[in-house]
Image 1 (tube, one colour):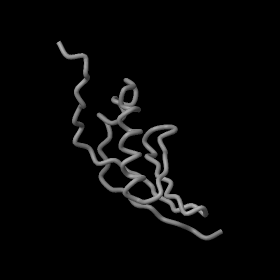
Image 2 (tube, rainbow, N blue to C red; image 1 turned 45 degrees about the horizontal axis):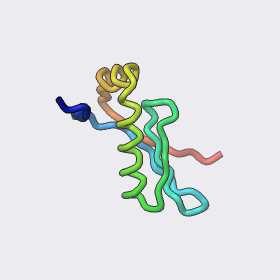
Image 3 (cartoon, rainbow, N blue to C red; image 1 turned 45 degrees about the vertical axis):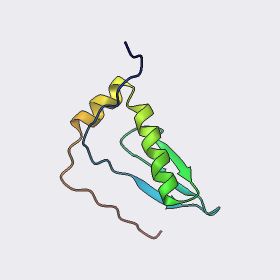
Length: 82
């Protein structure tokens, strides 16, 4: 019997935020989960890294509940100058 866990497929589109820092690194965050952020030298690397972080977080029961119930109708991001 195999001890490897199979990856679950949630088929959900998750919101992520990407910001380029002053040091040139891309910081990416998934606001659905506390502490769900990472970075990368490129956007592609940052996206790969956030997928890995999300997969780790989804080992937690509460995170699986959040993603199961997540079904937004609309998402928008705005900025303001202060």
